[in-house]
Image (cartoon, rainbow, N blue to C red; front, side):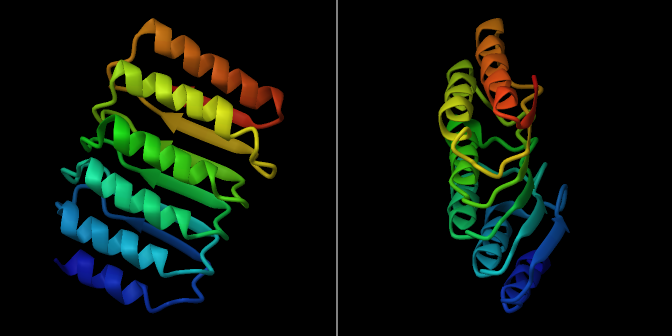
Length: 178
């Protein structure tokens, strides 16, 4: 509850350019996480966001709220988002990656989706999103994607490796941990 109240207070800092908050293992829950996502969405000047929401028993609905919040932050250049050890599944993981890919000024993306309940099909969808959506990111220099601890086979590892190599060929440093 207190973390959610703090998130609402942060929302009043409309000129804030950088925000780093580690809320891992705080038992934040869906309500507190939504409050933080909505607080971040109300920060139009934000260029750097580091938000640690790992191990908070969150589901895909919270990941969708976070993805929607990211979509409204058109000045974001640096996004570091930890959603590991939450059961956000395929839908939540893909929404976060697609939201980040749509950011026009994005230069750095670090997305931790370790042990988030990603399936084989979800990993293949992430590989498609990496190869189809990210080459359009003109300023993008770095992508780090952590998918360790999910149900990923050799087939999806191969697809992710291919997508990673495509980004590297375009001049982006891309690392995908499986």
